[in-house]
Amino acid sequence: MDTKIYKEKLEAELKTLEQELQSVGIKDPNNPQDWIAVQPEENISPADENEVADTIDDFENNRAILNDLEIRYNDVKLALEKIEKGTYGMCEINNHPIDEDRLMANPSARTCKEHME
Ligand SMILES: [Zn+2]
Image (cartoon, rainbow, N blue to C red; front, side, top):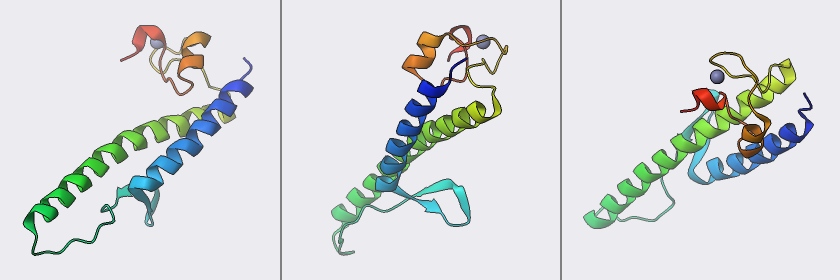
């Protein structure tokens, strides 16, 4: 199987995801695999309760976005590792080859169509 085209797609996606992650979080210095959501940069005066509440909402929102990005980021990383190991394009459930049209649409797919969530 020629993985070159998928590798290029995955590397581009990884870069985009990394930029998006950096807009809502920072890498955990103790665990570079992990990302931590950051407080949105705003000058809030503690006296204004409404503003404090808004900031907490923003933070929760950032966390939700970050979690979603992190899952995608890890899937892309995993796919790139599989390319290195030569196991790319195989379903994680039954080890059957994943259809190429599925991989074209989603290069970090981990399962075949039969086992997709
Ligand atoms: Zn399968």
